[in-house]
Length: 219
Picture (tube, rainbow, N blue to C red):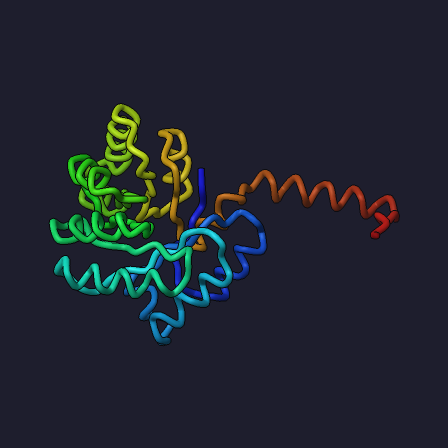
């Protein structure tokens, strides 16, 4: 499974990229707005830090506008992925941009039927929002299961990019279902490495080592 981080915070992105575990970045207008900086400048800097796909979302709602904005965004860097909403106009824009050779992330997916349409429109990624479905009493992971099954059955190349992840268990469930990508807030991504028994074990090992009075040589 690939890990994308869902943020426009350059400090967070640089720190996580240093681990070598970061495969890409997703942003949205709300995340970029928090930086207080020009949109294209932020996207360009992220693309310099991360080699993998960097999602940059269009602001237009009509197909013609989305296509024009998408083509402009794609010129920022080769790894820009244009993000469009799952509407009829968004699907039209997805088809046109995909035919240009641009990576497209179709976002705000909440049904398997929507995901099927996005794949047929040539989407590189489909972004189902599991947390928002959970918020209204539905099972977000059931949607992931359905999409993975449909895509596998028909051999679609579109990657399932699980979004709106709220907790580490969302990541595990998505991985077990065979999703291609999880885009995760920085705080949740860091929690994947945490466990109280790991911390307790390390404390014990260090305490025992200290008693020996030895040191480990460093190169």
